[in-house]
Image (cartoon, rainbow, N blue to C red; front, side, top):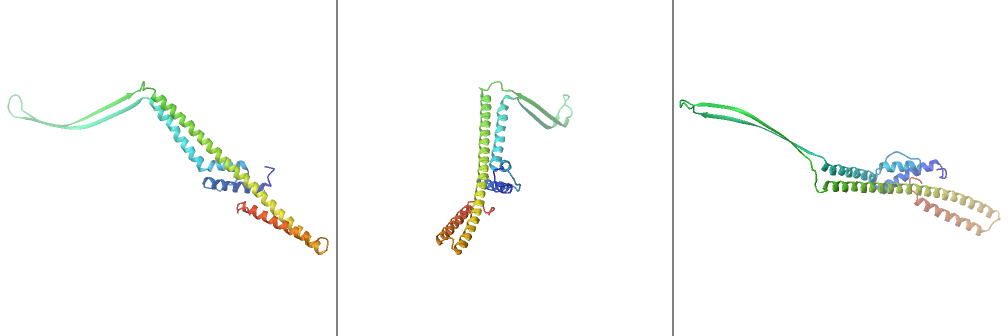
Length: 225
């Protein structure tokens, strides 16, 4: 980063680049600051909502492989049933004398366990598995493309702001030099060393410099001016 105009300028560029990247992607800006391009890219990578959304979509797509592979695994089902019966009976003995009565409660329970293993289903499971794996690969490429796009936007915003800030400082220094030149020209005119044409040229140069300064300020975020 030694080619950039000073560490304070780089630090401010990193912060404003992150703000610009946030505006482009709609992300919520964290309060952390970065002094380098690498730091700005790291924060953009960690906090960008588009990347986070694609990460979540990739995890959800990965689950489809497990669902497809379940066709190879055995299926186990269990059943349980419990009940209660009340019995009340009245019978006549074979001797024909009197009646006998009996009553009571009978509890019943049944249990079952069933295991099923698919041996062949017309290659449906293998086809579903390959389809799910293909969807995972596609989603991963989508995530990778989103990451590259976001990082490119962050790097572009960072470098553009460094350029605009450097141009702004250059135009400010240029205006200062032109103002000093104009004062010297006026002094020389008063001493008779130059003509009014020279004075007009100095004033024209200063006006052009101020116009360039205003253009540079309009291209630079207000947090820099």
